[in-house]
Image (cartoon, rainbow, N blue to C red; front, side):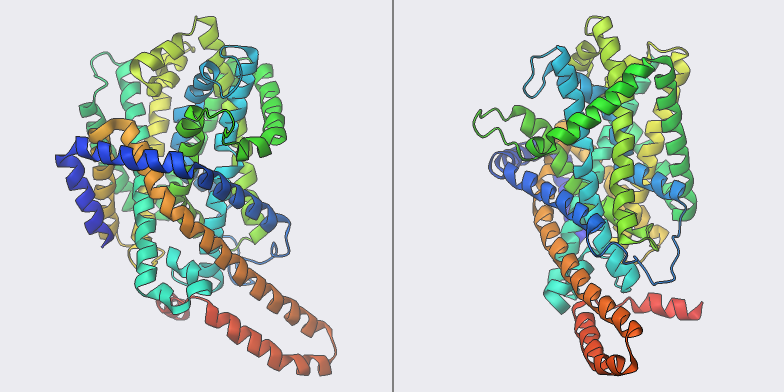
Length: 533
């Protein structure tokens, strides 16, 4: 069903690209102007829920059986988070966003010290706790029901505490179909960003390569072949090794810019920006410019990002859940939120400060090139001024391509899980089909309206899924509350005298039975495989 509906969209976009652009624009404008407040409140709720899970009473509950150990080391786990979560975006926006906000800040006077400070603050705001909290709550729900209660690795499984057996029927299918739609458009947006930046980098470095739509489509075609080869090797080889390469290349590139740039200024920017971000987080989080009426920055940046993170959450959340067996809830939420936020803050401090310094020193050259050739050239215009520019730009193109491949590889893996009943290791045929569909969707959206069409499709797909995520969070808290009560009683039973234990056995069996009736059915195939092994 999911494949058929998305195929219809691809055909529609291929033959009527202007109509796709027009329809998406109408829907996108309506959602942005009418329901922007909804995105702000929902993402704020995810941040508050993540904090509660860290400091609340459920932190010691393990995502798995009591004796389960983490499947992956911290380094590999963080590499997975970084690669799947926003690797392509960090590279694309590392220089672009701080410079853009410097010339068009939310409230400060453009091209001033205040504008530079505000640009760094809002850049971190867009890449900070809100996106990672969004990923964390969805990933936690999936990992909790999958690894602790052996439910199928499907979005619909997390709704069983609220809707019971209907999570296995038509309603469950509708939930999973919507998750597939959000995933496809979320990944397609990132593939489009990656393709345009690779094309820009090649065109900027080599004069004979034009920066055109045709080149973008050729890049998508080549990368599709590469990520399908990676997808055929499975998660423990292709995705794992590429994730290692990604994190090493990213750190190396950041260290290169840091060492050759204004290192002290970058460190001071890191601490100052982090402090400003934390201090102004409530006002930035809930600000809708209701009294000034100026919505351009809000619609173009904040609302787009919040929609992007929600649209990406079924993909990233499912993938993070898949690689997080054996960790406690507290360890999981801290790992998924705090570490990536600190890394993102330092990344933008390095590339943002270096980009701003070069731009102002050369009379706004990067900003001028961005206006003439697009945002995707910003990174390469900056790297061109560095020592060994050709080598460094080549490393940047390789890093973007590697992120591109890994994101698409992870995406086909997740889509395979969502469309095969929640199998943790979907077959290569299913991943091949989804790989072709992802490439087709990214190509059609670029054909119909470029990055603008990608952004509009993301905003639209994210809106209904945000509503689903609210109910998913309610279901998760309901299940955690019930199980926590049972775990407390079991602990008391072990501590008290035999008479107390005997008295509580019946009540405990009754509570356990009632709780298990609210959970999704266990994955029988997985249980049989465990018995066989």
